[in-house]
Amino acid sequence: MVTATALEAELLALAGSVPDPELPVLTLSELGVVRGVRVQDAGAVEVELTPTYTGCPAIETMAADIRQALRERGVQDVTVRTVLAPAWSTDDITDEGRRKLREFGIAPPRTTRETGPVALALGPTRTLDEDPVRCPHCGCADTELLSRFSSTACKALRRCLACREPFDHFKEL
Image 1 (cartoon, rainbow, N blue to C red):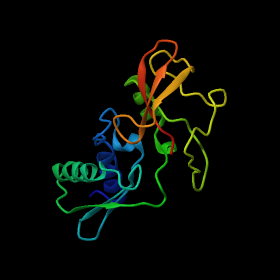
Image 2 (cartoon, helix red, strand yellow):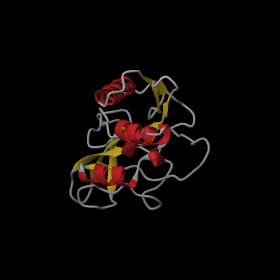
Image 3 (cartoon, one colour):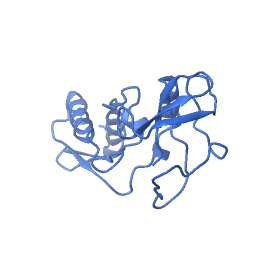
Image 4 (tube, rainbow, N blue to C red):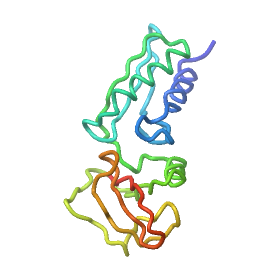
């Protein structure tokens, strides 16, 4: 017989293996948005999912994909609950996720390693000398911001001044 803890670990791994709908190179686990799985008394399963930001349009697709993956495993009663606290941070992206972003041509977010609320500003809060956004193509730290928004709201569009290639940068949050 499989214990609830072992089953929860298996289902957590399965839910975490679902690809992100906006960045399919990453799994939801690598993105750090699947927070937990609980098996209820009647065999129902509840998955806790934290969006990358409140109002993220991909959260419904993530939830549907998780439900589908768990149903294919044989779990029919699946609830995906959106959890907003603690808030997701780009620090939640795993090292493997950061590596995959770089290989996919997206500069991963810089790590903040701060606790508590993250101060947001309308302009850049770091200079290139302090913490540069490196080009995922050539690794150069000499890059420029082209647009604060790219293909999704969580990415900015930048260009490398060495190789001249444009690239997405997953913004810090």
